[in-house]
Image (cartoon, rainbow, N blue to C red; front, side, top):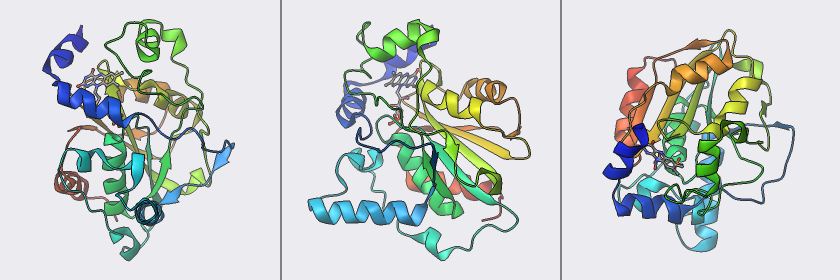
Length: 247
Ligand SMILES: Cc1cc2nc3c(=O)[nH]c(=O)nc-3n(C[C@H](O)[C@H](O)[C@H](O)COP(=O)(O)O)c2cc1C
């Protein structure tokens, strides 16, 4: 099983970061059709939180910060012009912050909007404990029919204006974390360029993008990329700029 390799490879430190940082907020209001946030707005929210808490943004702080790699995402996106001929959206699910950090950098680099996928029942640290065979993720992994995770919203306001969609997720047992599935299955990607990206402890990108492409049933899916959980901001920016997309 693919999982064996990465479980062995992962250090206790990596696990502690993942488990301690837990899951997203559970107090997100539910709604059908959510407005994406601009990268600048997200950073402003983080700065406000940081100044309120006297810290660096509370539990949504980036995993890059936790691993000691400073990630100072300033509002570069605010300085960039909106993409011409179609907007860019960065959709992501992140259980413990690593993928969110990457998503924020991509959005900042592209001047793109952000859309976070939030399970109605967020994963707690216990839920994410894959070393426990009876945890929520372990049970969902063992029983595919339990992986249909209900999201707060799968509908992006003004979906049609986005020409390019980045989709980010953590790797769970060698594939895309399944909270992204219903978003991919629900939305119509026809006419859009789709660029998947993921973070993982050690596994590669694998078939995660192809499997999502099959679920989507449309869209021009590009080769995806895997980043290590502690990837530097510079590496993410270099990858984005190397794509040659209009920013
Ligand atoms: C349930 C679960 C399964 C995971 N499976 C893998 C895996 O198969 N391969 C791997 O390299 N890392 C695996 N990881 C580690 C995550 O992919 C990695 O920590 C990722 O960066 C977490 O992203 P996030 O902070 O955005 O949730 C797993 C983590 C969890 C919680």
